[in-house]
View 1 (cartoon, helix red, strand yellow):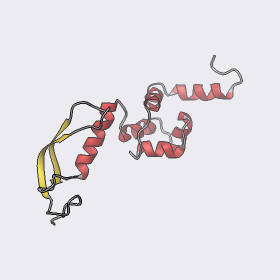
View 2: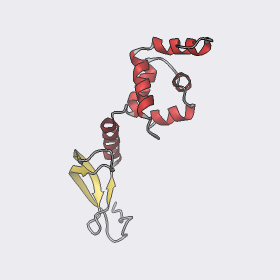
View 3: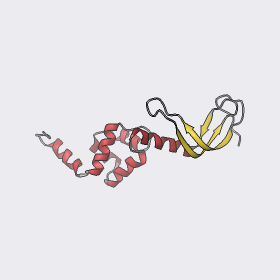
View 4: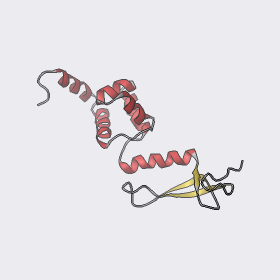
Length: 142
């Protein structure tokens, strides 16, 4: 099926396959990333591109890695490794249920601080219970 370009409406988009160079937004990375064996469509008139779902997923995964963050799949794997529900994990991290759901489903990106906390909780699962006990005690941590 020939799709007309949504940008210029001029011509049908051409199917492309090969190396795709992606320029990152300012502040994320100074050098572009090349994605090999990628599929996308491109308008021969204006150069607009329509990326395939698999290419978009590869770009998003790389975005997390460049930022030094866990991917949504890794956030979910951390929770399942701890045998917690999304609601339980959110409560342990001290965040809203919906925020946690969004991180796990790639609808928003967790902060570096939360990412560090998720990693720490996986490495030291007993820390969750210790923190909860400290919250409930009158004395606190210090």
